[in-house]
Length: 117
Length: 114
Image (cartoon, rainbow over all chains, first blue to last red; front, side, top):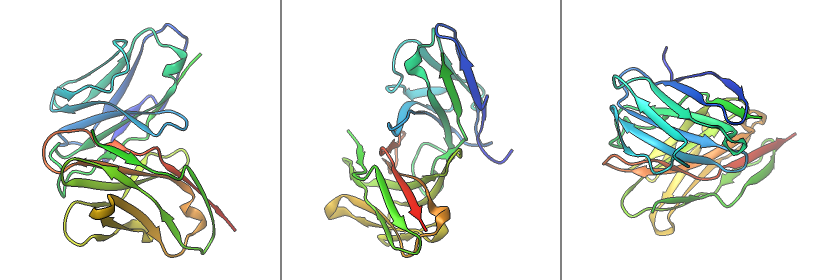
C-alpha cells in the first residue's frame, strides 16, 4: 500500500495480558517512530528506529514496553502485562530517513486503539 | 531538551472567520517545524513544514504558517475557516540533520460553528 499501515485498528484486552501492535511503514522509509496518544495528552514519543536499530527509546514508559524492527521494515510494539493506564491510541510513523530535510516529514498510520479492561 | 507549546487547547471560530493557532517551540539548533491535522477518527496529515527559506510557508487546504525566530514561534493561519476544518491541530519540532525524535505539542482542538 501507499501509506503506513497499522494493525489491528482496535484491540481490547484484559489487564495483565500481553499485546502486540504491528506497523508496516512506507516502502523505502528507513526511519520509523512509535507515539502514544492519550486523551488530552498530545503525542507522546515512545521509540525511534533507524533501520533495525533504535537510537532513541527514551520514551518507553516502563520495561513492560518493548519494540523491534526487522528487515528495516515491519515493526512490532509489545506491551507485557497490560495495565489500564496503557489504554491509548498507538501511532506509528515513518520517514524517508532520520536526517531531517525536504524529504523527511513523518507519515502516520491511522493508529491502533488499545483498551485495557 | 526540545519542546513545543500550544497554549490554546480548544478554539471555537465561526465559519468564514479568520484563524490563528499559536505554537512556540524550544530547540537548541535550527529547527525543522511542522503542522499536522488530525480529523476525527483519522491519522495525522501533514499540513505544512518549514526548515529554511521564506519564513511564510504555504500548506494544503489553504493554510499558511509564519516562522519567527526572534519569538520562537510558528503560528498557523487561515483567512477563512470552513466547517470541514474542524479537527485537532498539532505543531511539532524536529532536528534539521541528525537522527533524533520529533516532538509534538499537546494539540489545539478547533471547533467551527455556523
